[in-house]
Length: 339
Image (cartoon, rainbow, N blue to C red; front, side, top):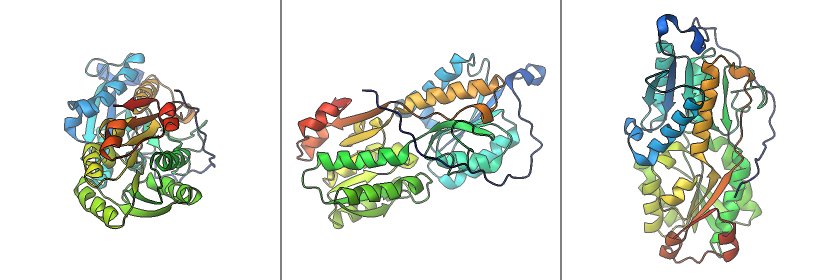
């Protein structure tokens, strides 16, 4: 089922510019001596992600977008891959490394990666995905006219976060206490957390925030949630949660906690519910935007895109393991039901 695009009201703000760098913005046509144009990738995952089927489909989607504009890795474009391995503190150094290499475009896959890239350069074009609020984050002046060196794909995070809380309340009978899990070292939760708390209040739910800085903390966080007698868990957007979704699903089952994630992949990994936009489509569109920039387009003139399709996925097998009966009204609204 295609969902409507949600539009977040945004103001017009630009950060104070950094000192201009000597690195010029270059299009594909200006490469000297037949050198392939270079795309720099910076993300929170691991180098093994490119060969891991749980993640490699995203790189393949990005490659498909590049191919639409005539760019094939190793033939008509070179890609420099940089991985933070779930350590956000590494992202600034990785972004600066790409700037020193003189890449033509940087592809930054999260708010944290985009923030690191923006701090590293104000001249090299940057394409981002999953930005919770590009204007509030000072990535752009507006969605329609970014006005700087950044463009990409935004997330209507606050609106979608509220819907996730509603789905969780509907799925869990007599829900009264919900745990909201965030990564405080991330960026996205700054925009989503207030909405999650307001949504809980509107649904007459008690909520409490639990912090997790990565997979090493998942076990202790779930133990704390269980001790607090929460009845369900809402995950806020974070790449370390996405990377560790199988572990989170296993812990939710062990502690008998219904949980909702931010992408369909969470439910496919065993989480009870997931609601969000289609990540592979966003990576493909990012590939297209990078290709446009390599062909000479300026990021300042490329409108920031918002997703138009959202998926509600329900894992009925997990529901049974949790002793839950999902209401038929919710099952009928699901885009996918996993038996």
